Image (cartoon, rainbow, N blue to C red):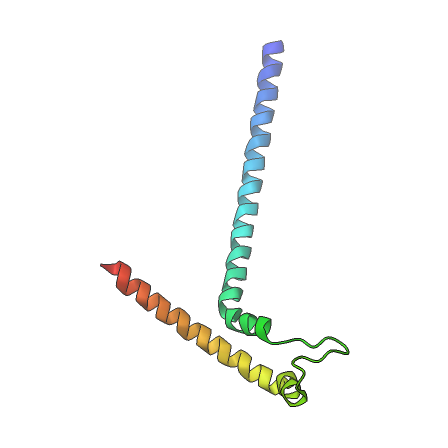
Amino acid sequence: MPAMSRSTKASRSMNALDEEIRRLRIKAKELESEIDENFTYFQQHSGSLFVRSLLPRKLDGEELTGYRLLDRVLENENLQNVLLRFADILAERLGDGLNWLVTRVFKK
């Protein structure tokens, strides 16, 4: 009877391992999908993210540049939106240009 009990334990262990492998494969597919979504978002918004990182942020009671007129211009929401749209367009064109260049250089 001990041999039978060992084989039953082994088969339960194998079943448990198989189930864990299935669960981990499903989790891996979910994570791949999430990474793809995040990468797509990054590709679509990298230009505006870059410009936002460059635009100065005013802290309470602080001046951005020390020049009142320049501070007002930089704080203008419409100007920031235009800069963000311009950055998105520029990033897209730059990406297209790099893709073309890589294709031309490495195609040979």
